[in-house]
View (cartoon, rainbow, N blue to C red):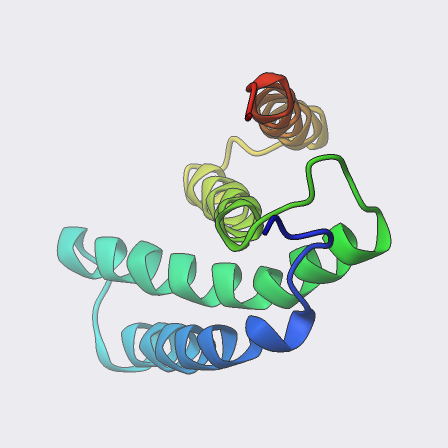
Length: 130
């Protein structure tokens, strides 16, 4: 039987908690106990991806419940949307490290990631399922 609604927020809370604890503790460890070089910068990005994705998981689940779509968002779609948020935040951090981040650049990046997600959702909608 096909699912009629998006998954509830409580389904994402255990994953968000585990990813959040690992991510934020990792960021704190990288910032407090290491010197800035190539390896620790990649560790910062890895733990940042965990942390920001964890923070976005319940938010994306709420948005998909609040604004239902046809077909309804699955667990994988909500996870993908949370990963987009993590990629966006880390790209902003990376641009800020190089001191090239501007507001128009951040808005253009957000619009481009939103467009990619919209196109992916349109592709999923167009798939014929008997």
